[in-house]
Image (cartoon, rainbow, N blue to C red; front, side, top):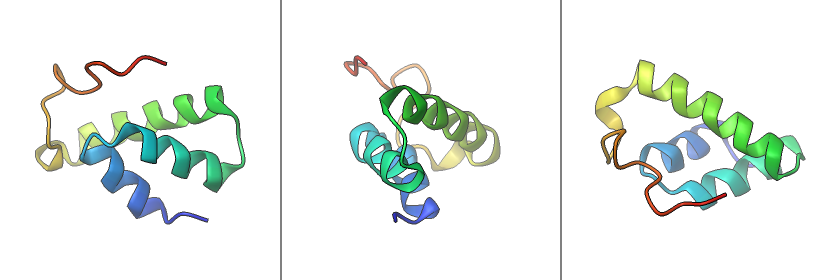
Length: 66
């Protein structure tokens, strides 16, 4: 099981695919559920740790299509 902190670090660094893989492994869920959990964690991190993101919100997820 992937450590929650590691998943958050993937999210902060805009490593979307590894973050989703970690969420799926941690929760044992499908893609839809992992995308929903990713969004919850992303929103929480943007609120709690905005300065830790490597990209501004306008650029985050650019060229990622799910």
